[in-house]
Image (cartoon, rainbow, N blue to C red):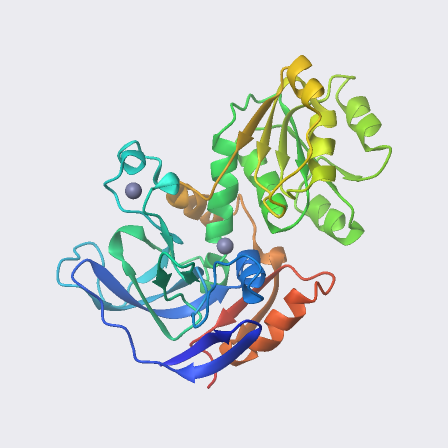
Length: 346
Ligand SMILES: [Zn+2]
Ligand SMILES: [Zn+2]
């Protein structure tokens, strides 16, 4: 089969690999679409240590069932499916508590990190346990379905805070996750959702997608948020950047006793103003991946409550993968989600 292989750091090539064979509890899926994740781009040069070559990356995917393991009951050949990126064991203490995102034996498709190597979906075929697969409704395209993982991540973060209808929320960072968070907050019943970013283009998109107010980050931001919230600050802040300035903004913009959910994860350490957090009794809540949010994500996308179309910069054949990785790696402006189609062209 055709596959996009990271043969060494910063070197992707189209190669021929054997088609994997599903074991009894697995599916072989013919991949129709697979999104390039920020974590793939971070892994590409070796900086994250989680894409040790040789590895076929790709964990945000959808396709059609090609073969079914002998023990699989709820899927058949020809089914349109998507799947969770996390392969959980189902047996550890965390899995038994339903916290499958915290599984002690967690593996991610398309990751090799020393502990394990698991081939991903930048290939014509991928094999995965049937327990992480979901049926895809007819009205969801494969390219849109490649965004389901990101939608689930956003919904999981939102699930970690109580939301009342009259709440105000601030989303810090209008990247892919930020734009999904703002839509998920609306769908969860949060009436006023503000979004802040440095980038005007992203804020314009955020406004189009229904943000109550978009705010350019800068020295006036805190004052603007206070003005919009009667001097209190936002009830909830969802932080989708993950660096010191964005955390500082979050702490300064949340109301006393409010919640900050930390989703962004680009720097390993940040500086936090401890006294503000303690004396204003702010809750800091980390959020990792998702745990059971796929069905809800599929439902919200299927009924149009979450629109991912404007977040897709390009849909391209697999052979264009190396060039797209280079562009994403170079931080070319105005790029959001790029989706590769391993089944298209030759
Ligand atoms: Zn991802
Ligand atoms: Zn587990």
